[in-house]
Image (cartoon, rainbow, N blue to C red; front, side, top):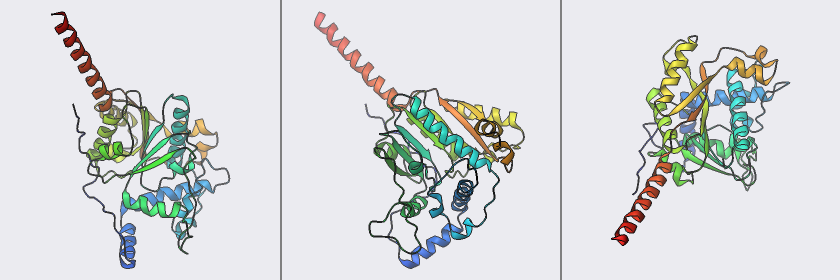
Length: 323
């Protein structure tokens, strides 16, 4: 029996691979400057850069500077932004879970295209990193992150970013018509453990995040973790009403087979370092979460259906022989 996965796409537009002329490149740059999702990605990258340059950084991103325009490197605010707390929490949770879980070699990152985790984190050997993000942003960042074989132009910084030896990284365009099948065609398997992290991938409304939840629920094995931070405006509630937000989060995730825990940013700050809480610059407008998947993946269900059918057929043959 062949199972066709649901066709899920996160955005109502698609991108095509194109060789840009100089005029097209300039036009694309203007489009990026007017794109609020791209500007939000630049802001997040700027926050990682500023934290990396602080006297006692909570995290260090050695590659982020090459992704930023020069004017964004001037403001060196030393306050700790909640986004950096979330980034550090997600980094640590990813690596701790991978090191403590037998057979966990698949990581799926849902990002804004400027995420440097595939390069800056020390992944265990044989890890497969799948980065689901906007295609144009990813390709622009990749040109700056990877070493050019014959040198770089004046405007490009050769960061020489490389994924750790023995690991592999795969890009999955978030605009893909069928994200699930695209991910599986890159080598993802729903019969092997995985861990998923959501931070930065643009969502236009609650329905688009539900599409993401559906995709993770279909592909992730029972017991896999899904963690990250999502914008609080999705809940359409006051950021200060924590009890209402928690109930909304519980109901939303449970409807897709996840048991979720909301993580307090203050708690993360206290657990990381005593001085972290004092440096936090503002109240977060995002929800930090860790969720455990309680359902079997589509691939697990199909494997068991096939095995059950085989056992039934063998039983029928044995009964026929007895007759």
